[in-house]
Length: 556
Image (cartoon, rainbow, N blue to C red; front, side, top):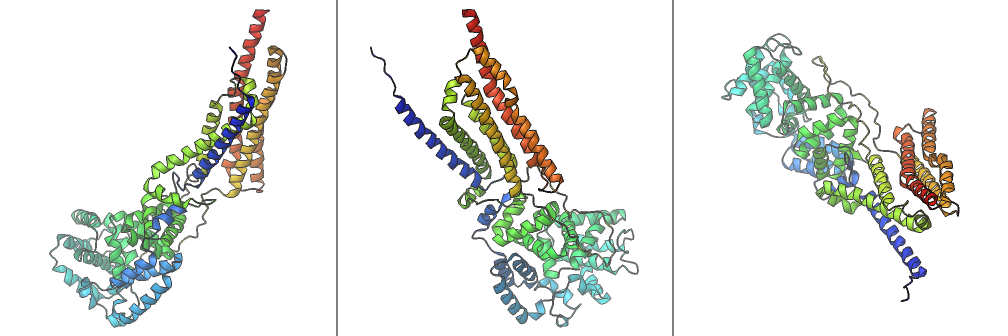
């Protein structure tokens, strides 16, 4: 019976179509992985744009505050809108100026509040039409006496406990309220008690303040309560009544009050931005924690989020992650999917990269190394492409995550233990230089060059093995030729060390930017190249030659 012979032309025609299909699919998966805006420890700018889409803008939030008769907070929001370049800032400015002309009596207090009735007698509304710090209304002895008399008949136990702390003489940062020079502490105690009386403190803040006040009265020591009074003094000298009360409503703990007071002292120029973010997200705690953690770069990230709308700010403070600026185009349509399913999107990104690399390598195998694969008869297994794909995916994961290996810089807003002098609490903010955490284009280019060099070395080694395999000589002689090429097979290590040394020398000479990741990536690629050549190709082929040599000896 005649044997069925497969035409080589049909096989040759089928393979080109297959490698072209794999090549196209691989490129498509790599494009998807590169453009999908998801990262492990950072937020992509495309996500902020998507999160802020069709949500309230900063200018819109300012108009809403004016509609609620709160020009004090609206003034800070207006400053923020101008700073972040909100398109509606001009319109908001016009509306605000018109509101200020029509309601001049409300401007010193930042708005109207029924709780202001006992304070109105302490200062004439016509004395000024500008926003006034709330503690400025308690500068006179008469004003404090009026407020003390009003609070003295309060039926709230916590208010009475706070008033009793004015009799304590064990203070560290204030002059005791019952001694000459103790007016600042007395004013702060009265303001705190009045905020409690008028229900302008959040429930969490009320619990903590009450516990500290009761402890202070019981022990006769001011203790931690004095720190809170100092924070209220800092904020009360910068914010008017409505601004302060709106902030404290969104503040859930004493720690957050301390963080906001610290930020007001070290970064007063950013107070409008910080204040606006706290009110928009209704969580001063998360905003303060974000800025204390990331410092000056955190303010820049917050401004970027504010420019994109309320949803972007909410996403930023909820994730508590820095913003990474993509080096290339961004897949806007994938941003919505990433926001809804961040974990699934992260898995999809690196699965797509792994699949794309594998398909590209298989396409190269079929197009360039089909004869090599046939000659080595199993020394070039399919697992080789999968192993390379896994290694390259890991390398891509490390280098594409700008905040994964890089230690976070020490925040310039970290709270330090200081004993300020009353009357000089507004310390100038330090001019901190910021260093972008994302890799620049030169670092990426250096890594790509090192990878390309090692890939070329890998192909040279495989072609050399193929050349030895095609020669018509005994297996023993082929084995000796393979041993003679050991230096070539170790060439990846030599190139890797040379690349690292060259990069370090250029960095020392300041010819390129200092980046250890870029330098040591050459060594990493060299190790991977030599491991693949020797484990996946040299060792199996030598084993094959040894077996063939022994078989020839037995036969002879």
